[in-house]
Every structure is written in structure tokens, then in C-alpha cells.
Amino acid sequence: MYKSVVYKEWLKIRWAYAAMILISVLALGNTILNLKSVVRFHSPVAVWSAVILQSYLFYDIFRFVPLLVALVIAASQFVPEVHSSRLKLSLHLPVRENTIVMQMLSVGLIGVALIYAFIGLALSIITAVNFPTEVLTSMLLTIAPWFLAGVVGYLALATAIVEPRWIRRVILVIVGYGFVDTLLVLGTFKMYERVLPQLTMLGSFFTLGILLSAYRFRRGVR
Amino acid sequence: MNLIKIGRALLLLVIAAVAAIVVPYYYWLAFDVRIPITGARYSPVTDKLILTRATEKETKYVDVDGKSYTRDEFERLTPLLNYRQLAMAGTMPETLRGVPIDVKEVALNNLLVRGVPEYLDVPQIPLFPMLESQSGRAKLEMPDEFFRIGQRMEFLDAKTNRVNEERSVLFTQALQETGFAFPAKHIDGNPTTRKAFDEGYFVVDAADHLFHIKQVKGRPYCASIKTPDDLRIRYMIIQEFALREFYGIIIAEDGRVYLISYSGYKLIALPIPAYDPSTTTLMVQGDFFFRTISLTSPGNLNVTVTDRNYNVVDSYKESWPTKFERPPGIIASYLFPFTVSLSDWSSSFLNLYVRCSHWAGLVGIALSLVIILTIWFVRKKKIATRWFDLLVVAGTGVFGLIAVLLIGGVDDSV
Image (cartoon, rainbow over all chains, first blue to last red; front, side):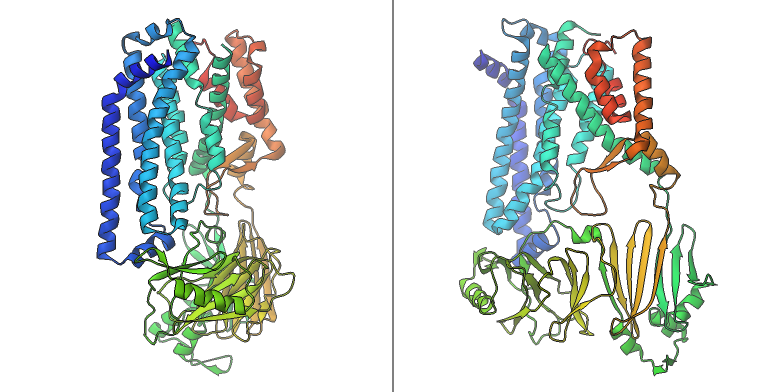
């Protein structure tokens, strides 16, 4: 059964997914070219100084890419379901309603996670080639909250789309925005180092929210 | 159904948490009051401290006896601090306290070191450039290598991103010969080329001993510094001054402050009370005759004036209500049982900085409970099925109230 859910979700998101991979590749290309160009026009040590001493984030284009990826995939997955109430059909399959909703959510999250893994790996390689391991560690700690913002954005938007009442949708979007906003503060590297575990735990609280929305959707709350 | 209820309960908690960050943020954005910043300068003319109070409209200058001065008068009373202005206006005195005054000497003797909480506790990548301290050039230059001190001292070449073995071995050996225990606990320097000369780094080793490391004509210079046995270093602020009186400041774990002097690295304990560097700003200001050491925190100013040998000649203390002790703060403590802030002036790291309101917060909680129970009563809702909501409101007051009102019940059509 899970296989057919995966297939159905894939059919919905494939074009959006391809577009998001393309955007990630373009952003990576931008990062590499930018880095090469500053090294060429300044010296390698000037770039090291900027990165190590002045917190120059050569990868800062990725502050919003994970969020964009997550939001586009959440929208492409759940907007068609809510449109003309298709989700009601899925929820009447001979599988427990919560199970099917969580399966849909997991497909989207795995898809998002794969793109994040690709971005994270590529940035790690770019960083490791040009800088010492200390810079690699700081880069990973700096981008971690940006990825967390993406995951929370995905969960919050999915919950908001499935929710049948507009007023509650707006509330969910505002709360999601408030949370994501706290994860995307612009500043120096490693700024979130001490607060990442707490924010991750709090962000995970969004996971089951979609069950409430789906229940209300099926009940036809208006 | 159970999972759905858990999902709702978790959403409720997230909304309350976001409210606890966002609502106080906007509250303070709307109602924060500007508290005049008080500073203190010692006048070598009147031998008295003059307080500067920067309010919204103007800066007032008042001495400790309550006599006020105009800006011009203040500048004439603190000629060493304002020598540029006085020299331009042609009002610089020729002698002061019986000593002939030369503008170059004044500039050389003027010092300022500041230890601001949020700049002391700051994210760092533990890699440092080792500048050449005697290059024979007028300007300092950035080297091609950065170093780290782990199990040994390693130099990394920025051109190749590889370890330079030769220099790593050279410096590691020099450190070992002075008795350095790897790895380093703190490495502090002033890694910039925008200074007159370079004194390298002050490093605390694994055994809590202090060392001075710099590069002299391509060779390592390492010195072991004798410190009191019980000294545990929390922060060091290293700053090169042409006067060459001290290398920098040590702030110990117990809050005492020392200068690292140029004469045999002798530590000079500053005659000021132990202080908390996570809440208080330290300022050491020096001129031709005196040292003025100020400790400023929200609500407190503690100034000690010493002579050039660090013997106390004057001191001054002042307190004023903080923003939490003024009307907006008092109202906030009744409204919010606690507030959460992502950033704080005590650190450059983000965190969940929680501030509790103690007993006053119970008023807000009680009010929130009354409001939610009234709403449920009017809408004829059962309380028995809503005990979790009630618990959240009882624990988080207005934030829980906002969360419960926003999320509604499972089947509510609103």
C-alpha cells in the first residue's frame, strides 16, 4: 500500500521536485563561482580571513533555498488534494485515515530530506576542498537551522493547506511564519549552536498537526 | 482520535511558545523606555569625577557635587580626553598639574579597552593568523597561514589548504620547550593588520597555564607567564598600545580583573570589585595621569579612579531603576508570567533566554484562567474534556490563552 502512496505522491510532485533540484544546482553553481571569483580577485588568505575572522558566509544564498524547496513541495503535494476535495477519496481507502495522511507526509519529507542531503553534501565538499575542518564544522552548524526552517515550513504549510477553515489556515500560517522567522535570523556563523536542540524539539511538535487538519477536513467542518 | 488529540496538544504548545517569544518582543518594541546612559570621566583639573548623562535631547555634564557644566566647560575640564577639540580651538593648556603638555605625549598615553558582554561571548572559528611582529615593514601584513593548537600547533596554508609541516614542527617544539601542555583552552589575540604593531597571542594551555606566543623574524617566540595558582581565565582582551604598558586584560572565572604588564609579564590586579562579565561592561580608560575603570550594567555604574600605579584616588557608585523596575516593566511582569527572547545582550549566541516574573506573573495567569473559563461557560463547553488546555493556560498565562483561542477545539467550526 505504501508503494502506491509513494507513486501517487510522486506523480503530484515530480515537476516541482525537478524544478527544486534545478534551483539547488543553480544555487550551488552560484556559490562555487562566487567563491572562485573572490579567490581570484583577492588572495586565498584574504578569503580565509573574511570567512574565519569576519564571518563571511560564502554559502548564504542557502538561507532561503531549503525553505523554498519545502514550501513548493508541500504545496504541490497538498493543494491538489484539497482542491475539489480529492483527499476525501484517499481518506476512504481501506487503510486507517491517520496512517495514510502520515504516509503522504513521510513521502514529502523524505523527498525534501534527499534534496537537503544533496545540498549539504555538495556544500561540505566545496568547503572541505577550500578550507580547514573548523570551517566545515562552522558551515554545517550555520546551515542546520536553515534546513530546520525548511522542515518546519513544510509541516506547517501542509497542516494549513489541509485545514478546511480559512481563519485557522491563516492562524497556522502566521504561527509557522513566526517559528521559521526565529530560525532565519541573519548574523554570524554558529550563532544557533546552543539553541538548536531546543528549537528542533519544538519544531518537531508540528509533525502530528496535520492529523487534526485531516480529521476536520474529512468531517467536513465548515 | 488519540493521535489527533496529541497532534492538537503539541500544536497548542508550539503556538504558546511562539507567543511567548513574539508577544513580549512587540510589547517592548512599543513600550520600551530610553534610559539615560551615564558615564564618568575624571577631571585632572578639578580632581573630581564628571558624570555624562546622555538623554534623548542632550548630554548633561554634572560633577559629583551636583555642579553642572556646558559641553565647552566639560571639554576644558577633561583636556586629555578632548585634546583634539581643544588643540583645534587653541584652548589646550600648556601645563597640567605642573607638567608641560605635549599633544603627541597625550595621544600616546590615551588608552581605552572595553569588555562588552556580547562581544566576549561570541561564536568563533578556532583558527588564527600568526602575523610577523618584526617584518621590517611599516605596515603589518596578513600571513598566508592560519594556525590551530590541538594536540600540537599546526599551520595551515591558505593557498593549498594543507598543513605546513616545517613551521608546525618548529612552533610545536618551541612551545614544548617552554612547558606547554597541549591542547590550548583559550587563544586570544588581536588578529588584524589595522594596528601599529603585533604582539601575537596569549594562550591558556590544558593545565591552565598562560603563555605568550608570537612570531619574530619567522621564528617562534614563546614565553611562559607566571600567574597565581588559583587563577582560572575566563576571557582575555588583547590590544596593542604604543605606550607598551600592558598587553591586555584578563577576566578571571571569579570575576577579578588583571592587566598583563610589559614588565616581566607581571599581573596587576585592578582595584575593583569582582564583576560578572556576562551582565556588565568593563571599561578601562587611561590618560597621562589617571586610570578610570568603569563597570556599567543596566541599573548600575561603579567607577574607580586610580593613579598610574593603580592606587585608588577616587570612586563613585550610582544606581537607577532598570527597564524592568519602571512602569512598562512592572506592567509586563503582571501581564506575562515569563518572557522568552531569542537574543540577549549577555551573549552573541542565540538562545532561549527566559525571564521569569515571579509572583506578579500569577495575576496574569489568574486573569487568563478567568477569561478562558468565562468563554467556555458562555459557549457551553465542557471543562472536563479540556483539562489539558486549562493546564497550559495555568502554566503559561496569556500565551496559553492566546494559543487555546487560536487553535480552538477539535470539532469547533471556528
